[in-house]
Image (tube, rainbow, N blue to C red; front, side, top):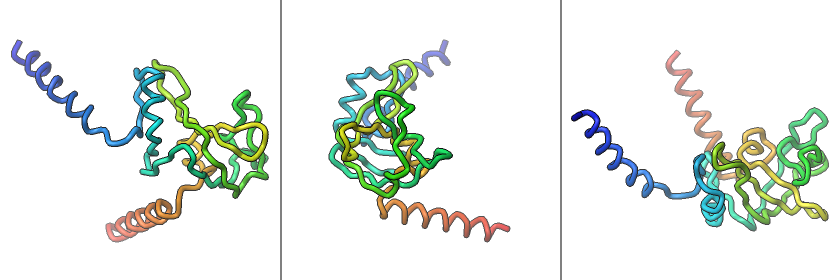
Length: 160
């Protein structure tokens, strides 16, 4: 009985601390309602690397990762079969809106609706596109990532 009450008390003390520690809407956990997820995105979206993306920001496109050099994670909303062509590599696009796409039960993928200068807007799966190099992070973050990778490589070399 004492053990159960100890667990309940410690859990109740821990949850308020967790809810007040959130600084930015970087993660939208499964179980969050769509309305709450969308309201979190109104402040912007912070990627796992620390890059905060907001409506109106410009994204610099890298290279497409599909075999034909088209973009795997940048596509027209109507169908995922209409991937952005390879001719968009190296261009900048403007974010028109951030959306949480998914379901309350399974969680959300953060989508940026971008203006590419055509009639149709494209959707960008932000985290996947950054991971595969289809979106290039700002120079400050790239330099910081390269420095941390260099430091890690140096530490591994010293350990050998």
